[in-house]
Image 1 (tube, rainbow, N blue to C red):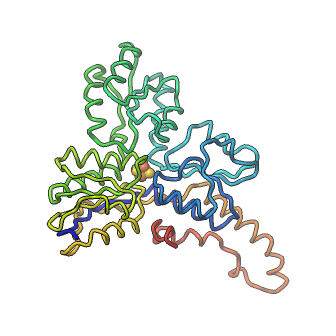
Image 2: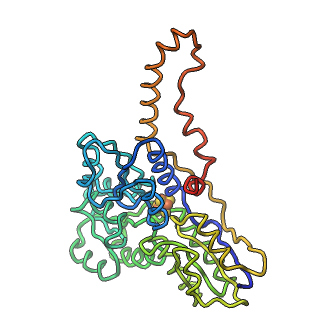
Length: 358
Ligand code: SF4
């Protein structure tokens, strides 16, 4: 047992993850297994395992998706050639890329077409970085640290226009020093007006900083391959907490040395489900009531991917046409027409956590 638990708000699923999980859940419910998913739909082992149990097959190469199959592309964004290839061989492809990642792809494409060299701050090997660098491979320089920046500056020289873009899920500190150094070399440096770090990442980091002020121990729920989860871990340590633990699930609390006078701060990366957060809180068993530490109300919402909405419209048209003759012959009025579009009407009211549990 611990003395008290503070819970960060916002924490856990962001609008992009909500959209991706609901979209894949829809495909799982509407079509027979297997449904294919290129890369992990989101970087969370528990979420991925739940979908595997429902017949989703996760692949790392689009060639593994058979002809005519249904395939979803992950929230992290995919290289343009993967997006194109996913539509070949009569496959039905639904791209669940987060709109904020698409925005960075768009910035990369536009800057490259104007002849800019692009410094892209990101994590080597991360799906989002792989997808974004593939948008303009001849113009993008992946920057993981200051050494990379120096090498890129050396390569670019001083007669080119230069832009700075970033992976959406970095900690501000991972990006700011590189930005400052890049400005020293390129005073005319182009950056996105509001930066590329997404609202969900920065909101979760702000809430965590408040949590650190109140807590002896910080528990961060999320997988080891989740960039925004690792950024949270970094932020907690940089903010002065000496006992920071990243855990996948409540079972791992047993391995942490918690005391009954500890005040514990709990937060979760953008791809960690709410029921796991609840099980961690339960496992902490605090003497005092759990208290929320809220920095902002997050009400962003991203609609389901256009391919999915178009698919439902097409199905609606096909089914409605098939039954129109029957309706006429039975004297049934038009008000009884088929309306499959209703499946999305309550989408905003139902959370991805509920969908997953259900
Ligand atoms: S963390 Fe940000 S960029 Fe990533 S899916 Fe969520 S909203 Fe989109």
